Length: 264
Image 1: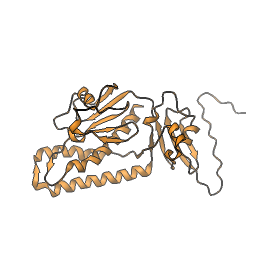
Image 2: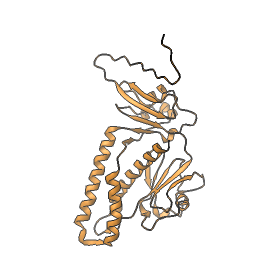
Image 3: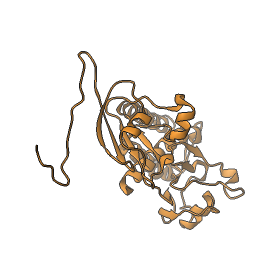
């Protein structure tokens, strides 16, 4: 028999009945056996997690991520459309711009983020195996090429965007959104306080109600991200808050995913 050495890998191909498709999916991070697996169509996220040996003790399933190529393609088309729409809005209202210099400089940053952003294709999914066991409808059917990321527990809150000192802050159970913004030096001059976005570890995002930002507790989960975009100015007849809110939210989710991957 062939003698194996420490660090060797063994690949046993899956038996493939005639006319049966085989998908390739990858799982990485805090599972016992990360790697690329062959699965049959119809297999689910919980199936893959169990095949990969289950979660490690310091895994953070609440922050689990599922990336899918088809979702990335749709995100990319949406970002391209948003980029073109903003250009069109500004061009059509060029004669009624308030504070043209401020609008141009700040809008340029937003357009640059849209132009350079590469959507990751994150798909919201349930990673809590107990919840899935209680309600199998929460289980996600996997697709060919899916990439699953199971992060290790992170106790930091990341603050990005238009603050004095962006970066990671230690999680404190009694600190809310406004507290983390203050700990990051506060808003910069052109920060858009109406579009402060929180991205939870599970990928769900919400806009912080600016009317209550410093009046009530906006609690966070460990591993969350707070994103403060730059205000781009005012154009008569255009509600930029409504136009930019979904764009800012999408940018924030992408930044959160990229940040967590780079910190693993």
